[in-house]
Image (cartoon, rainbow, N blue to C red):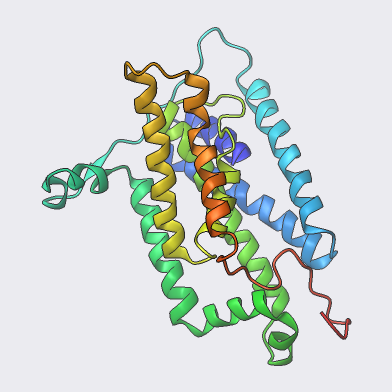
Amino acid sequence: MLTSASVGFIIAFQTGSIFWGMVAAVAVGAIYGLVMAYMTTTLKMNQFVIGLSLFFVGTGVSTLIPKLVIGVTLLPPLIPTLKNIPIPLLSQIPFIGNIFFNQNILVYISVLVSLVLYYFLYRTSYGLEMRSVGENPKMADSLGINVFRQRYTAIIVGCMLIGLAGVYLPMVYTGTFTEAMTKGRGWLASALCFFGGWRPLPILFGSLFFAAIEVLSFWVQVSRLNIQYQFVIMLPYVATIIVMVLTFKRSTTPKFLGSNYDREKRTL
């Protein structure tokens, strides 16, 4: 997320095009996904070790690139942020209209992607094959399903979406890039997977819940309530811990989560 936010912002700043900034962010995500897939699927290295390594690399690279391209400036460089696109009629609905139907294009894309993923995973044969690879790759392989292609596809596409999520921050929230601007939102996204049981639609609704908590924290900061701002900043993460405690035991995780598949092994 950080590297995509950094590169996407720089490309948008240099070209003056938000579109090319988003394309660059998605491309960065694809590169990270390809590296992750190669290391874990082809070389069969530990997924968690490689993931943490890429996390630290991304943190450093995201800080280095802006300094090399733009340098140190007195005022932060800015790009125009995405404007809201109200949906006719629906945006006029009292209260909920402005909340759900007067958003920027990336919000609409996120909802559309969730619906498409749900249909793909639960209504198509290819989606069934991908879910079977996550549950029992040995059985899927015996049925002629290309396990390695499925894993490469899932990792790369997933990282492309992560890249798009990262570039959302400078293109919607701030209009510029700052160090560590994700503030742990990537870990919240991981927690959402447990919260939603790895199902697109529950994860979508869960993201709305966490977004509401974050908006609440902003509201408390600008209100006259006598609450320390440090406590307010903690609200989304405290809510994450509480939700994880309440839902972890009921969460159904893919049985092969975090494991590498080796065709030569007789047992999993």
